[in-house]
Length: 345
Image (tube, rainbow, N blue to C red):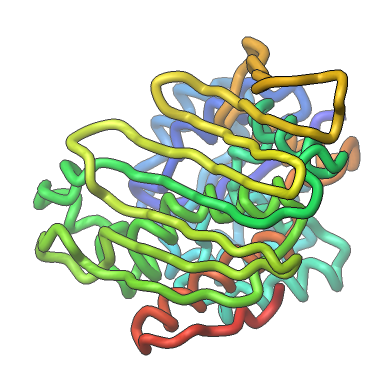
């Protein structure tokens, strides 16, 4: 049976268009209600959701109380998200939350504990986990194709162009008090999570440099160079920054005792690997992802199905917390010029 869903958002809620499209496309979504104090998103919601849109309101508590949703989709600027997530959990809702959903990991940790205590899912929007090439990479690693893991390289570069726009610099993304950080907490978070997801291990210590290399007038970083020590003994490095004029450069590479693996999402999306674990298979192997939808629509669908009890959640609250812990520990390490242990691995 389709479940009722509530959207908790505000004017210019991040990725709201994509979330609305995902809810509209999911057969497991029944009635949708939306709470937005500004009221600015109601028209767009009506246009995309059509008859699925049941109610709109400006008060979060009233919408949750009256709509009785099974899942709440929280897409807000980071500093505003924790109270909304808390309210949804109090009303017995599973939660899908746009990342980072906090400006300090310490604000997210009690939400994870509350969700666990109420047997509710708290799912950060780490949608790349569902990409076919990522799941295949995870399978290869878990089956021992690379053997013991030695090293990792993470690379996510986006455009500097957006930072040169005064209108962008006025948004919450470019203000540390509202966003918690810059490139790493907004974009780099995806590949940092994938490194842990694919390898099945956490990050236990971080060090490195973080700052505003491009010099645009804002107080969040545009550049990060991180050193990582994983719980399985593997070392890693990560480059996370706004450097290009347009587009993205992004990849994850792993090396182990029996081979190597690379996931790349750039001009072409690909997975390739080399392994000595199977003597009958030689040379570099390639995986071509199937032609199927990726991005927010399948992620919303998976989260809704989890809320309906039809599948496991695509990410747990603890997994979301561990990537937030790693990022905020890194920011502190870079600020102090020290290596910092990650609180919860």
